[in-house]
Amino acid sequence: MHEPKQNPLLRMTHIAKSFPGIQALQDVSVELFPGEVLALIGENGAGKSTLIKTLGGAIQPDRGEIEIDGSPTRITSPVESQQHGIGIIYQEFNLLPFLTVRENLFLGRAQQSLGIVNARKERIATQELFERLGAEIHPDTPVSALSIAEQQLVEIAKALVTDVKIVVMDEPTATLTPREVE
Image 1 (cartoon, rainbow, N blue to C red):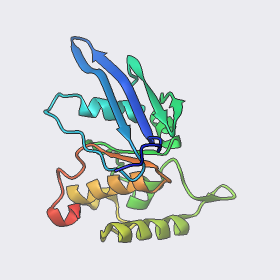
Image 2: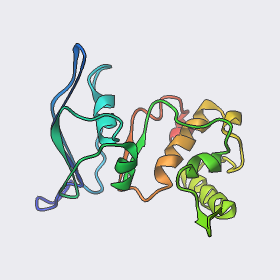
Image 3: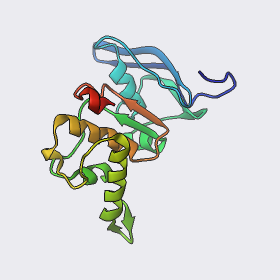
Image 4: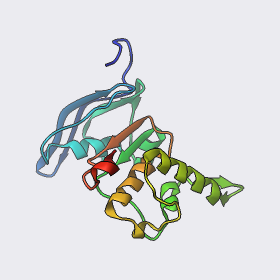
């Protein structure tokens, strides 16, 4: 799998999180090495989504440590998580239905030149990304016109449009057909 002397890309140690009346995470530790695929498997309520939200900066752990590339890291927001090269694909969609696919992909990170959004550059990047994913979704399609499966593919594309080192998926294929999963 990995060489013994190689450092993990991600190390989460002794992560704990509780909510009123619920201990969601207790002393959870995870390591992820470059090129590795890691699956978290457990029953509903086991804390998988809570751990992902902790890494994504959506919630703060009560205790524990996170290291990225061997450096201690405190992730206090989704923006910080993205800045550390982490792309999170949540179960719940986070798309604006009145915007186009392209606009959703580049929301908050628009391709600009002299303060003007370069829609052409974004459109090309969107088309190339969907070609890599094997999906036929046009960049100028309003998200409201997409099927649920197509919207899930847009969520996946959102995580991949930036320079990510770690991609975390929280059951993103639950709504997809086998071809769309491929």
